[in-house]
Length: 112
Image (tube, rainbow, N blue to C red; front, side):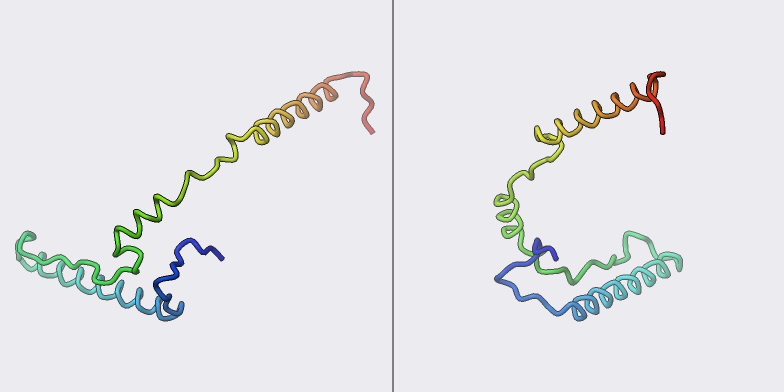
């Protein structure tokens, strides 16, 4: 499993608790948006209605400094299609296809 979002400083909640918390937050936002829609359709001006916001976010979204430090630590990932091995592999595949094409077109080639 990926360790990308794990941080040694913040203890992680158990998976069921995180899912339950996120579910309740989605439900809260949904209910508040429904009430906003009803009040707007009831004649209230859209500028006067309070729009709900996300009250809960996972901890890694809170601290901008932590995110910046993680981005600084992370180097640019190696792109495999830019490596010589990948280019050589592509070239070898092209040569192999050319050889098969030549054998198919060759009338002296006996197929089994």
